Structures are given as C-alpha cells and as structure tokens.
Image 1 (cartoon, rainbow, N blue to C red):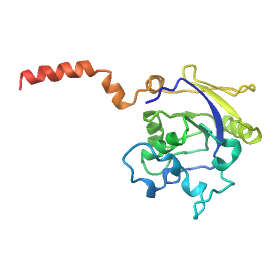
Image 2 (image 1 turned 90 degrees about the vertical axis):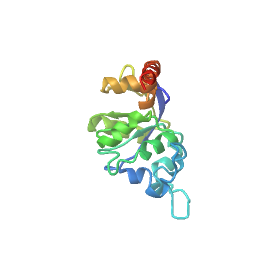
Image 3 (image 1 turned 45 degrees about the vertical axis):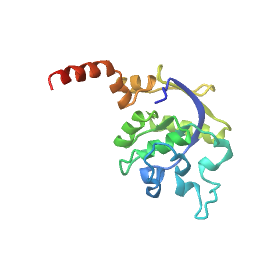
Image 4 (image 1 turned 180 degrees about the horizontal axis):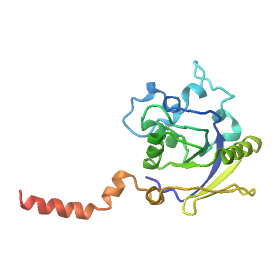
Length: 198
C-alpha cells in the first residue's frame, strides 16, 4: 500500500448527502477479483448517460476538476452495503483523501485499509471548502497527515483528528497484510519450532 504522508491535489465537490456504495460503484461492475480496474466505473450512473456519453453537469466531468485527488463530500458518505469495492474504485480513479462531516462506519474503516485518508470536519468547515472549490479554478488542498493539517495556500488551515494506529498505518503504507508481515521473522521462527513437535 502506498504511504500517505503529505498530499496536494485538486479538490472536487460532490454536493450530495447519503452517497451510498452502490452509487460509488454500481453492483453490475463487481465481477472483478482484483482491486484495480474499478475507477472507470466510479459514480457510473451519475457520470454517464445510457449511451455511454458523459453527463457534462456531473462534477467529475467538468474540466476544472480534471485529475482531482481530493473528494469533498456531505454527510453519511459511503452508506449502504459494506462492499470494499467502493474505496477500491475511488483509489483506482485517483482519490487519496475524502473530506466530509460524517462517513458510514464500515466504509470509513475500509478507506484506511486501502490507502485512502477519510477526514471528518465540521459542516461549516466542509461548506467553506465547497465554496472555495466551486468558485476557484484549479483549487488545491494540501493534506499533511503527520501534522494532521489541511491548507490551501490561500489562508485556510484546518486541523483534523485521526486515530493514532490508523495514522501510523497510513504513514507507513501498511494494510492488514503489511502489518502481519512486520512479524514475518517471528512467524517463521514459530512455524519452524512447531514443526519440530509435529
């Protein structure tokens, strides 16, 4: 998993509440067993017409948000089913961080396990970010996980809280497997010792 230390990227404002995982990655695209390849289907029914042409009004189809890597969202982002494909699709599309007032619990946990930083801010703070992202071209945010700080180079500075263990894992690029492999030598030693008693 790619470490998250400091990230700077364009912020795209998705102005909808209760965005569920089926909207993030529709069920008809859940046929792959790899974690990659889902980005092209992200928000598919909002991004594309029935004939496959882009819906120009949708935020991610607007030129000013091309290449966005920070997603601004509203309350209860990631609700619905617990499919891990939702963070896979967001990450594969290019998003490294999501900022919202609240997240669905399972989705929130899955983000950390897949290298995405979900940040909870107050509704007023999120609204200010929305205002700036919608009125300025190429609006970028810098997110410093080590310092737990969001800045925009134009006077805005917000601190945020992250559980210390999750912060450690993201800073070091450790998912559940990576954490286990930190103890590979001890596991191997245990297995070798166990074989002598078999």
